Image 1 (cartoon, rainbow, N blue to C red):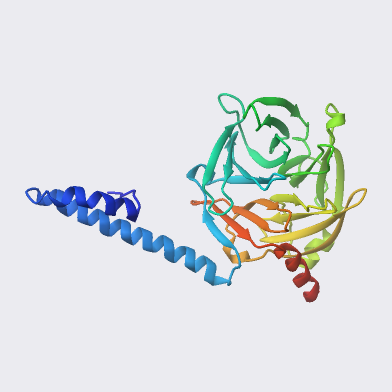
Image 2 (cartoon, helix red, strand yellow; image 1 turned 90 degrees about the horizontal axis):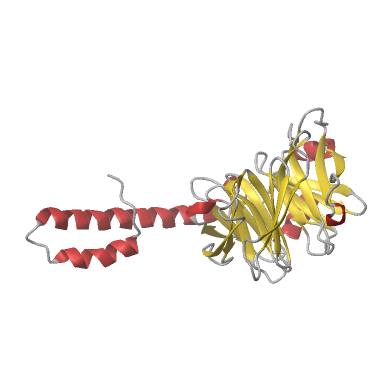
Length: 314
């Protein structure tokens, strides 16, 4: 028998059964339930403590709602509101960044569309979500939450498996990153795509950046991006690779320029880092998918400190 409850719920239920001394079996079940839930609660607390103590993490680690077990994208608004999306269905959750709890739900369409969603970005009251095969959805999250504004096929499925989305600039442009190139793609590069809303009917502009310096810095055979986030000054972006538990930083001028790469902060703790966001204070948010989705909230300045540490190692 599987018991699904919290220790607090069990404490609330037990007094209701305490008077049932005429029914020993029911009383036994109630007591057993409390013991099981207390144990589960203790195990959960111990697990969180273990996560924090393994690498002396500076992050606050929060369990995400069950709908985000396969979290695949994070986005931060200018006001600091944190949004997340998961694979398979177009359902966006606004999160309390201090607890990981869901504040509201925004469906992309009614009923919500299905797709392999792999990235999220927000600009004012417009939130963008993209699928791995390059279908871009833009929806209102203001006065008409979930109202579809437009759906655009970026026509990338033959050459790019998209795995990350981020704002580009004030024009509403977007950066996308490919987990891997497809077809006759170049396996020796990291591929970025730049979409401009003024050219909505045109293909995104493609940038291929040689991956050899990244692989050498990491001592890895591959670098497969899983998320991308632009810095608040919009002069660069951070890319993480879940499979390699690594990061790479790129400077933005006319095109992305590789600067450095290294081991992801608290790498052993990140089972599968799929969501990434940086706020105005340079605080870093990383979301991990798994049996239990987790949000790692790092303090201000931690990502630039991560880059400096890497500088010292090189």
